[in-house]
Amino acid sequence: MLGLPRNMDGSEGPRAQASRAFARNAEEAFALPLLLWDERWSTQSAEAAMIGQDMSRKKRAESIDSHAAAVILQGAIDRLAGGVL
Image 1: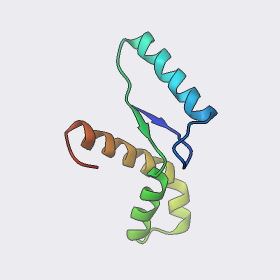
Image 2 (image 1 turned 135 degrees about the vertical axis):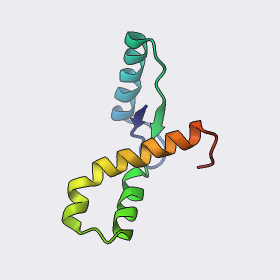
Image 3 (image 1 turned 90 degrees about the vertical axis):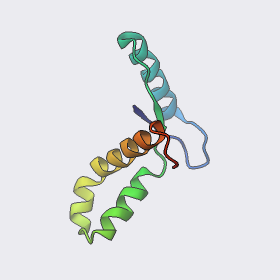
Image 4 (image 1 turned 60 degrees about the vertical axis):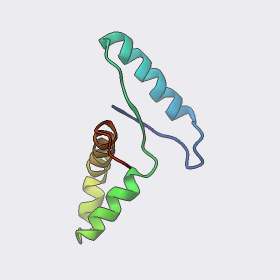
């Protein structure tokens, strides 16, 4: 799975295009399909969860990326398992 960094309006800029190119190359190199996942709201979702856990700003700043990655991964797992997002 690979995050797809779309713009907030849903359009795709240079970073999204680079992610798509990386996914194509990885699929060819490893003969495995890659799932591209829209990551627009992952950081906000992770931050809201950490605020809900009363985590300090400093700790949130230190771990926001790993929490956002976990949000993306959980969403993909739920989707592949047939869950509703």
